[in-house]
Amino acid sequence: MLRETPTISANSVCDNFFSFRTSFNLFFLYKTLTFSYQAKDFCSNDSHNIALHLKDADKVSEIRYLFLIAALRGALYQKYSWGDSISMKSIIEDTFWLPVDVSGEPDWAYMDEYMSAVLSKAKESLAHLRQADGDKHALNMDGWQRFHLYDESLFDIDMGTKLDRVKMTQASPDVNFVGRANTNNGITAQVDSIAGIVPYEAGNMTLSLGGEYLGSCFIQPERFYTSQNVVVLIPQWDMPFGVKQFIATMIFRESRLYYKAFIDELNRHIKTDFSFYLPVEASGKPNWAYMEKYVQMIMDNTESDLSAMRSIG
Image (cartoon, rainbow, N blue to C red; front, side):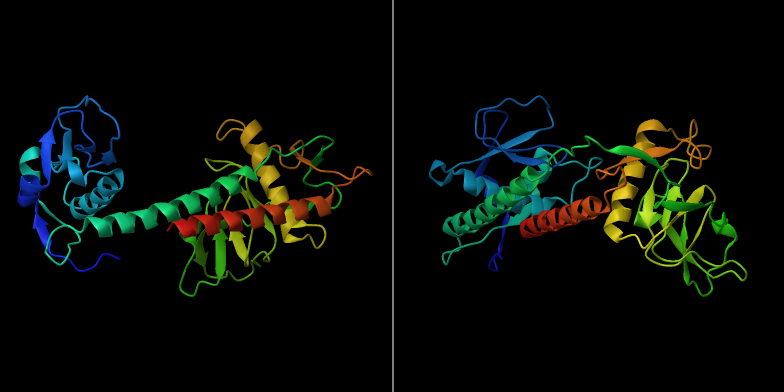
């Protein structure tokens, strides 16, 4: 964290630290308020761009320019927009914060130390992300077979409750409502239970038959109702979460590859010719153990990726 510092007016900064040029500079910003460090000579193709460089050549270094970019962005980002873009005239009056030494001068040593630590941490985080990305590989589907949803040991297909969300009440909501959505497990609201209509149990899966999010398939975490064009897949056995997730992914992949919203949707195919690939054992039956193990590997890798991204933050 930066130590407490006084402000330095942009006017004095321009007089003492920066000068303006139109090309061949190191420190560059333009009307969208995007800042960048230019290590080599450059030309600008826009008259609205502004180039800055430190007047004192002895103070110039890449790491210091990067610190100054952060300081200027923090001070000016909220002030300017596309409709009120920065200009040569306005920047003369702007101020921003810099760390100072005991004499009140910019503390270049502190900037060097601070940015070196930031860059070191960034390199470590990028190394983690590259390692995580390197772990990814194409899935070998040799020997896989196609299955229908209703095949033995897969699902019973229920056409859903077909309720209209706008006609439902939410005085004491206790049931999820699943619509044709592709986020939050397809859950678009919580609604009141309806007398005479038993909600589906948690652990069943939902599949959107049409619309923009055709093929969206989710494992439901709690009791639920469904909208129209959302079917419920009820496992024929105590199917593990990893197996359900694997199948949901394959259903989504198949739906997006071979069916089209508003043209050729899943409605007339779901109980007849809709099929999707699954890995199989030597006997030709679905390889449940492989599916569960594969999804667990994906979840472990995802946790590693998230840890790497958190380290960047």
